Image (cartoon, rainbow, N blue to C red; front, side):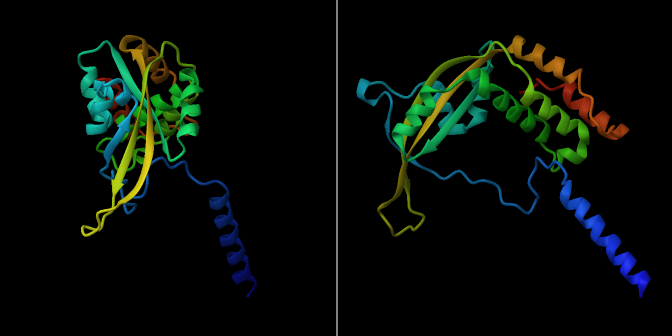
Length: 224
């Protein structure tokens, strides 16, 4: 009986250790549904009173998301990043826009895009690349980036229709604010390459994880 209590106590201790120190998970489990973009109609926008249309960068984002912006970059010397905020309080969103600080926000914008690059075609990048992945994302998020600039901003008022095919009324309306941030490609690349060269994870990766990581780094800017 005493042996039974000993093993039971050991199992409880191990379980508490797992609970106290959870793994760093950046990717959702495969059973978690993906975020679905809900179609909307643009009812109003920043330039409507001026008789102007939607700027190209915003239009590309509304039509194709981040991919539309990246395609646009092919003819530019800069990488483009979109900071966005949405809600039903127009004044609060305006305050967010007016108080936006590119230097403070850019590290997270950069980390999100780097994370997406390493996640493409990989279900669990934290397993594929080991601790290299976590360390990289943290380094990009914590880095002191320079050279970014706020280029433009735009807002729209959106109308979402009900999912019920027999309903004609609008389900809800809100506003979406976008801020366009740009950074020269060569300047971004030099800073990111410096981060790549100084990745020292606490837990050494396996040979396979290091090889997989280096392959992405080698071709990182192809289609970035």
